[in-house]
Length: 139
Image 1: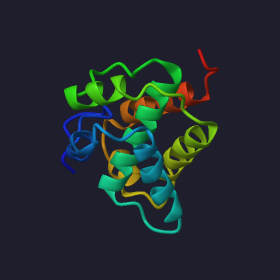
Image 2: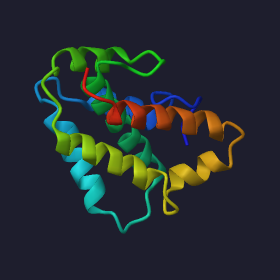
Image 3: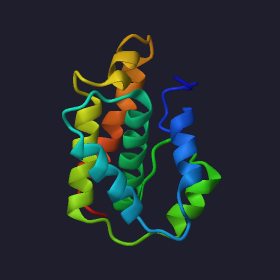
């Protein structure tokens, strides 16, 4: 796992995903990823897929709540977010929450790796913050 911290952006998969966001596409791109991720619900979740799903949930939470997590966003993502401030649908919020649920389930390499880490509770707190922002009333 190319990770150096518990934050959403502190791993290679998330940074690669941010750099790959097409500046011409909208938040629909995030929805496509989440739909594909959830369509394979009976498969074991590889770590990179889990990291990308958590990142997508963070993006949806940021767009929905108007609040980011406490870490700085990569420049590529900051630019993308500023051009994608359209309303987030309830379906997208639901899918982001379901993706988090899948990542926190037994069949998740991401969860397994973090559970074996002394920083598990810190990472779990980051994920919980995303869930809370997704469940919060719209500002």
